[in-house]
Length: 81
Image (tube, rainbow, N blue to C red; front, top):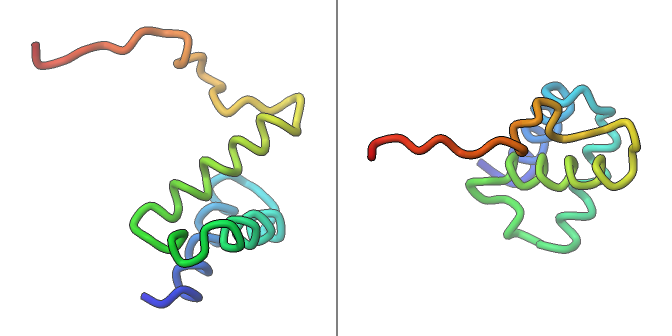
């Protein structure tokens, strides 16, 4: 998959799943591409873009919390012990 195809897929997926303006997602990806270059277009591109957007939203929108479920406050349940 070439960069433009990956980029289009990420923009569509992230804007749809997070209910964000497509232009905002494009702007974030442009900034990330300027910072990371081709490294952005790897196996975890969607995860990296989502993480950056959630970080931006946490910093800029007082009504936004990336963890709406309070799961970060709870301990991690260990399995297979």
